[in-house]
Length: 345
Image (cartoon, rainbow, N blue to C red; front, side, top):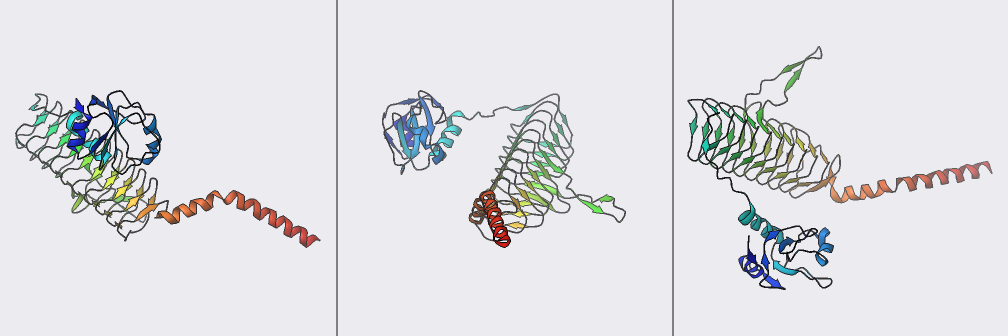
C-alpha cells in the first residue's frame, strides 16, 4: 500500500490536518505506532495515545476536539473505524484465489460441483451434495449427505458439516467447527435413565455469516436451527437445537444458547454469556460479558448485564452497593456493640 494522506481524505470525504503529501506504507495500532504507518482512534479509552503516538497519521472523527498539540498528521473522517476497516479490506486482506480439486479427495459420484471451486486434500463430499461456484473447502473437511453450499463460501480445515445442512452465499466457517450435530435431547425415565430423542431436523445458515473456530451449531429436533444473514459468531460458541439467530447479530467467544431460543436482529452478545432455552430476545439487545439471560427480553434495545441479567443501570447500582458491603458490615457490628453496651448499662 502506497497512499498519500490527502488521497485517503478524498476517498472518504475527509480532511487532513498536517502533511497532505505524507505517504502511508502500512497500518498500525495507535499505541504501537510506526513511521509511515496509519492508525485510527475510535475508542475513547485510547485517546491518551494520540498525543505521543509514533504513527505518522491517525484517522480521527471529524468532531474530535484536541486537548493539546499533536505531532502526527490527522485525517478527519466521519467514522474512523469503518474507514480503517475498509482500507484493511481493500489493500491488506489476503484474497483466496485458489481453484482446483485435489486428487486426494473422496467425492461421491452424485455430488454436483460448480465452477472455480477449490477442494483441498482429504475432503469427503457425500451423496447428493451441491457445491456452487467459487466455494473453497480446505483440507480434512467432511460434508454430509444432501448438503448445499452456496456461492463464494469458504470452509477452512477440519470442519464437519452433517447431512442436509444449507449454507448460504459468501459465508466463512473457521477450522474445527461442527454444524448439524445432534441437539442435546434426552427424555428422563422413571428409573433415572435417559432415552435419546432422535434429532431429525437440520441447520440453515443464510448469506454473509461468519462462524469462528471450534464452534458448534446443532441440528433441530424437528424443523431447522436457523442462522440469518449477516450473523457473526466468535470462537467456541454453542448454538443448540431449534435456535433462531436474527440478522446481523454478533456473539462473542464462549457464549452458549440453549434450545429453541430466538434471538432478534442486530443484537450484541458479549463473551461467556449463557442464555436459557425457550425464550425470546428482542431486536438490538446488548448483553454484557458473563451475563446470564434467564427470561424473555421484551423491550427492543435493552442493555443488560449480570447473572441473572438485568437493566445495566440497576446492575451498576447493585455492584456499587456490593462493594460497600464490608464497610456496612463493620458499621453494623459497631452499632450492635454499642447497643449491647447500652443494655448492660
